[in-house]
Structures are given as structure tokens and as C-alpha cells.
Image (cartoon, rainbow, N blue to C red; front, side, top):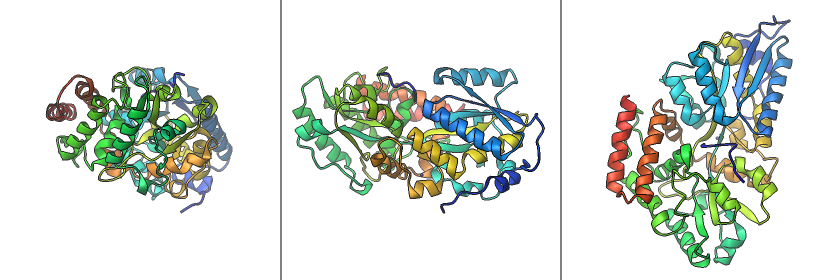
Length: 430
């Protein structure tokens, strides 16, 4: 099964629509002219697109005369299309963008500063880490629509046969790095040579997920100025050393490095690996396709728990013809009811503080909801803020190249960190 749908890719209460939209500068009273229309370009699974259509219907019903045209594009094509439309001066009014790509558009001046279009206190509806992920020069150039983060998905039988029966059920009890190593060693002894203890989901642009190990060691790849490299540190050394050992100790398939073309989840689905790291978006496919008993537990910790800040933001292009209407749509989509419905049906995590605090229950494998929600709470604003760097696309290439050389090319830790620091400095200077 090729899981390409997410390719490389935390005060309860629902505010009423009318006061919020009016505060954003779009009147909800009376009939609106037929020109009150915006375009929205996105990709998505069937569940995601259904969630967007429901949110659009809700917005249009609350705002007589407003129209939102949904343009669904395959993930592999969407940014080529959006970039071409921006260059041609005919961009979509609203589009969906991964957090690791957000900074490129905001830094290039292609997005609308939403500050004058959002009501006072709008930021308070979101978790701090989510709000940090849509900032550029301390201004919001998007809204955090949802997030996702990786936890350990495990094959119950394979762990049991290796004598691993004590799987953490709270994030406070998550395995330490040393304990994870002990689990992997037991699995390595129990499994045949053509099967592996685990596989990590850092392929392609998913290399940003490697940063979780850096964050777990309480490190950074960018200093607080979000320009100066900070990866050549004790935390950086610990993260590179430990993750390189996955390969030297035979814990992961040798062909599963960051430039591999097979997704980690595919290997786990095939029972070639006992454990994988994966996001909540995998749950529907896993529930329908797998014929073995499986579960989920929290990612390991060293100095602290951490996670990758996945998911997507919604942004308005700078030259949107009706910026107030577009901003009102973003405000409506991120109200509690539509966000809850979207996340529960699509197996994704909310960015609203009230929903993240109270938790949600996925429509599929709701018993695992708290594992994902709890892991997402471990992401700190300083973690997600770094990933929103305008230079993130170039930094991703640096990480890919240097980790590949470290994992399978024999490059030592010191050389890897020096090269990472140099590459990051060059990327942020540009």
C-alpha cells in the first residue's frame, strides 16, 4: 500500500459566527452581492475534503450571498499550480500549506498579513505552539488549521514474542532513549534477519521529523533570532549519535534512510518492522487494512518529551481580491465546531487550545486519540516557531544531505554537525 495522501510530508465554547465575522470586517446582515466570492485551493483525503465542504456550507449559510469555490488538487501538483498562479497574478484567495512550507511564502511577501482582519484576542483560541507556526516577523500570515504528530505504532504480537509487554500508557512514562534501545535490542534478537525492530518516518520532506530527536535532547537548530545556526551542540551530537546507531545496530532497514523512496508506514504495514513512527492520519488506513493486532504509544524522551509539528495552515494570498471575506472564512473554519468535526472525521489534531485541552475522539480508533493529543502537547512554541522559518525549504535540503551521509555514508558526527551548521547559515543568509 502506497500511503501517498500525506506525502512528505495542542475555555471550551463555540463563538457564534455573526459577531466574529462582523469583527473581521465582513457584514453578515442582509444580502450580499454576487461578487462576495473567494477561491480556496487545497488537497485532501475524502474525509478532509468532506470536512472542508461542510465548513464552506456552514460559512455560506451564515453569510447570505457569500460563496467559496473549492478547488481540490492532488498534493503532487498543488504547489506548482499555486506558484504559477501567483507568478501570473491570478492566485487563489486562500490555500492550504504545510507548516514547513509556510515560511517560504510568508518570507517572500506572497501572503496577507492578517493582523488588521482578525478580531482582538483571536490568537487566544490557539495553542501557543500552533500560533507560533504561522508567524513571520511577529505577525500572523495564516491560521493554524490542524496539526499532527508522530507516535510509535507497534505490532502487538511481535513485541510480545520478544518479551516486550510493558508498553507506556502515559507520556510521563514514555520510554527513555536508553529504554527504547533496550526494546530494539530485544526485538533484534527475536526477529529473523529480514525483519527489523523499527523504522522511522523521516523520508523526503519528512526529514523535519528527525528534529524531534534534537528537541527531545532539549536542542535547537536555529537560535532565538531564527537565523543563527544552533545545531552544533551537545544536543545535536546526542541526536545524531543516537539516530545513526539505528543503522549501525541493525534496528532499522538499511534502505530506510532519509532519502529512501519507500514510506516507513508501508514497511510496518507489511510486518517487516515491529514498530514505526506515524501520524494520526494513518489510523483509517491501518484500521481497514491491517489483519494483525496493533496499538500506539508515545515517542521516547531524553531531556524532555517532544514531537514534530505536522499538519497544515490556511493562508490568504497578498493580492486576494476580497481580503476581509477571505480572513472571515479562515476565522469561521477555525471555530470550535468545524475544527472538531474536521479533526475527528479525518483523524487529525486540533490547534485550538480548548479542543487540545479537552481532547477529541477520532471516528476511527478513538481509543488512541489521547496518545496523539498528548504527544502534540509536548511540542513547544520554540520548536514549531523554528520550523516556520522562511529558509525552511533550504534547511530541509541541508538536513537531508547531511543525515544521509551520516546514516549510510560513514560521515562522523562532528563533521555532520559542522556541515549542518554551515549549510543552515548559508540558507538563512540567502
